[in-house]
Image 1 (cartoon, helix red, strand yellow):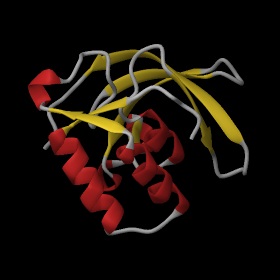
Image 2: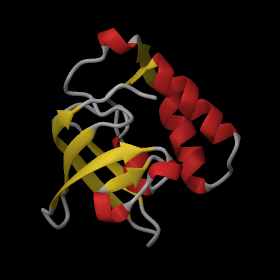
Image 3: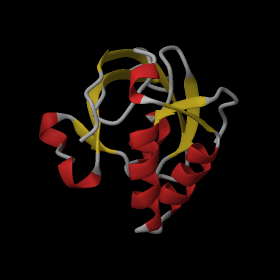
Length: 129
């Protein structure tokens, strides 16, 4: 979607997300596949602390409403809205992966519109399981 900045993903996240995409077919997985295609892949140790990775706790802002949300980016089987765990296959999850603090991305949402999200902070990164 509209974001000229490179994404940064760990090798482990890249491999797991590629497998996940290959096992499903939806508009979101197609968009996520496009995003993976433009990602810079690094080792876990090389991942900058300001990049959203799988299992990251991230604060992001919906630029249309100004609302800030804190959530953890997880795989679909771990998603739980009450615990603020957002699936990588949810539109906002796919939008955030690989972004750095301060980056903005425009991303389609189910309503048919595009929303703009900005990464405010990465509160923690956890190793991928």
